[in-house]
Length: 288
Image (cartoon, rainbow, N blue to C red):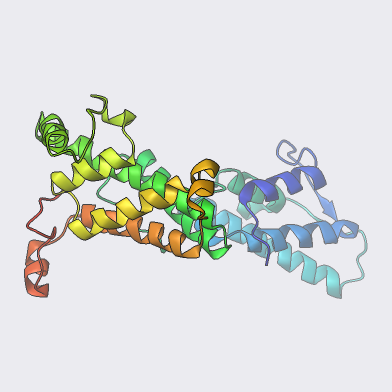
């Protein structure tokens, strides 16, 4: 079944029923029943995660779809060729107009329900953006787009680690400067990065985050591998190394972003003790 997004249904309604959004006395005659059937079919194809409405609008949407279905059934068994689907008083408008108005409020993108919630990120737009990248990476993997999945995972990892490092700096001013100095001294970092962490790359993010014990050692290893996979996106490097992005690399990148999200999610210390392992590997502090 084809995936349909809300804006596509809105566009179809506007093309089939021009001016419906502004007409007070709008009717649809029986000869246009195929138009109505197409609308309810398209609405049914919109994924549940994209129908993000408050209870009132969601109820109006479902009642409008039901009203159209009932009218189509009446027409199927009736000989009333010129009967019409008009505004319904208890709905407060015409079903077609109400469907259009409801779907116009819905996004065309939304993370799948299986995507990590990332509730520890208190910046809602940032949280939604990262979750969209993670969800899109899963979708790209399903569709065999190894390169797309790897790039999206890298983007999500960078955003998660940057958020964690900035939170750490807010709690402990100077923590990043001290960590960078130690990493440069040990030659883990070969040069001083920009004083603004937003200008860093994935290499700086993972090494500083690992040094500050914000992520586990095994997670840092996964991220370093994902960084290497991401480098293969560049044609010149891939040609030199004779490698290309494949399913194994995409899976590795997905594992890395999942591990980072896990490590940054606050843990209940009692649960961790009962489970026989610490919350952050080697007694690592909570990043959230």
